[in-house]
Image 1 (tube, helix red, strand yellow):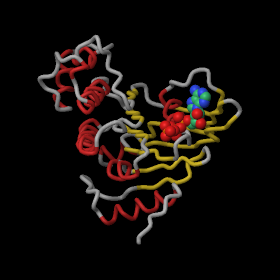
Image 2 (tube, helix red, strand yellow; image 1 turned 90 degrees about the vertical axis):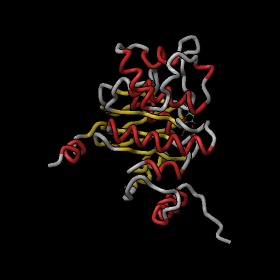
Image 3 (cartoon, protein in one colour; image 1 turned 120 degrees about the vertical axis):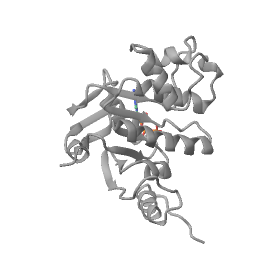
Image 4 (cartoon, helix red, strand yellow; image 1 turned 60 degrees about the horizontal axis):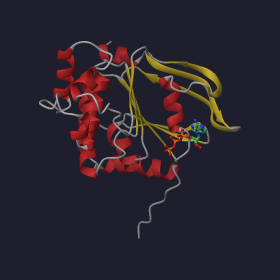
Amino acid sequence: MAPHTEQLTRPAVRIRGLTRSFEGRTVLDGIDLDIPAGQFVALLGHSGSGKSTLLRAVAGLDHNVTGSGRLTAPERVSVVFQDSRLLPWRRVLDNVLLGTGGEEKGRAALAEVGLKGRERAWPGELSGGEAQRAALARSLVREPELLLADEPFGALDALTRIRMHALLRELWKAHQPSVLLVTHDVDEAIVLADRVLMLDQGRIGLDLTIDRPHPRSYRDPLLGEYRERLLAALGVTEDAS
Ligand SMILES: Nc1ncnc2c1ncn2[C@@H]1O[C@H](COP(=O)(O)OP(=O)(O)OP(=O)(O)O)[C@@H](O)[C@H]1O
């Protein structure tokens, strides 16, 4: 078996019967999900459908919640959010290195995300896109087996977002973590992910494999078929007239 195929047979995330409720309202209603090691998964769903709740559960960030179920995740997990969460009083390289050693690794990670030369900048001197690049470098330096990303490009302009898509895919190819990317954006999901999940009424309503080679173009007509299926599942119908 080729090493990559072998890697894909070992689940990195295993979720069984996961439930979460807030104030008596069930948000996750018995989720079962396996994410194989190295798989790039996007999670779509209406606002309030529970995407972040699921991500927080996998990240182990949901202390004191009401819920049940079994969940296993790798030891090395990195999380990236919509805002970079860089500490403003530390320079970019120090932010990347927080809690880890190895300055060389930090410099290499910054070079990988296109921020070579900005090591001594303050976070306040970075653009939104640069700050997200720094956040990705900070996540990479920990060599995560699983990267959890909650709308990481949601606050960026369209062009920067497209550049960040290419960067994230390159980083995934180089490091091969499993990825769970929460997004509102159907196009982002189908261009980046190899599998797209739709959260609906507390469950995985749709589990779609996107069987197209990378790099993908937004204009690929075959991606259009996936787009329509996902938009229909979200209840969005396109008026052709
Ligand atoms: N800590 C909390 N306390 C109370 N309610 C919560 C809490 N966390 C989430 N919820 C509720 O659970 C539901 C799901 O929230 P969640 O943030 O997971 O949805 P989402 O799909 O990520 O939404 P969005 O796309 O708008 O970010 C929402 O109704 C939210 O108000």
